[in-house]
Length: 384
Image 1 (cartoon, rainbow, N blue to C red):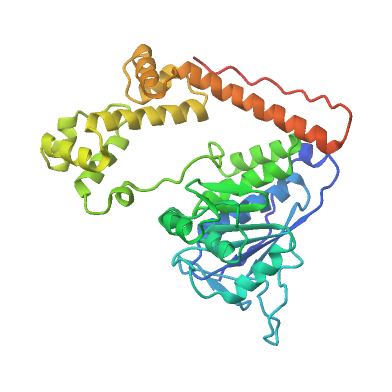
Image 2 (cartoon, rainbow, N blue to C red; image 1 turned 120 degrees about the vertical axis):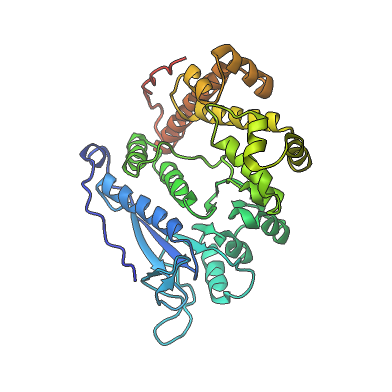
């Protein structure tokens, strides 16, 4: 069984001394059998580390199950919890989450379409309190069953998006990595919980100390960047086209593994064991594109990600994505996206400055002062 011990990392003194102590938020995680251990550990690690970085307890964390007994994750490991939905004598609590400020439901496969009535009842009671509710993996499905997602944006692990939208037409269902809508936080399975918890911390702490905490978390866990809510879940190609086309799936995998030095179509066909004409037929039938065109779109999409998310020079990005020169890259990029790589990067910097300005304005309003001056240090210009 797994017991979660408190981290012993040293707080950042510059963060801890920068402002008065904040109110602690009590966060509960309800575990269903076969939940994703990666989802749970991602959330717990981020929030526990945030406490350490801030030098105070921003989040009080606790785990729950139906009966208070340990719960087996999808990997088979059992996790010890601190509470259940029933009292020791077996009587159901009227509102077992009443003492919490936020509740997250962790569920994975199978989709919880039936049963779990005790949990549904507890979630419905918690909904009345207008506190924060969330779901990891397929947890959003249980929130929707409890009428907690009516007229809210929400997401769910990608295999269940269509069924979720069909079963709950009053919920705005997306394929995004995570959604945060007026106190409803939902995300896909796996590492998506890490990114959503980072965004939640940033939303709760919209000041310089909060930014420093988030930056510390990204560095501490070895992540290059924080993925945003607008990013889509990565749906495997086999799931999009069906599992009956292994040659096509293999061909796309070869393309994705060879961006810097693109393979000729004939070589890809040879490696997967079909003729060029057969390969072109597969791409046309299932992806409505030619292999060369699809390959180019993959490389350009990767280039856009690098332009938006890294400080690499435009020339470096073009070369790493298989373009022989700067003008070649710029021309192909403009033909596909309608703007040049330089304009794309300028848009990113402009958007970042707008976000910082909006945060400063929001923080000023929250303080209720007549005027607050916020200086934003300019970022180093990226290499062009």
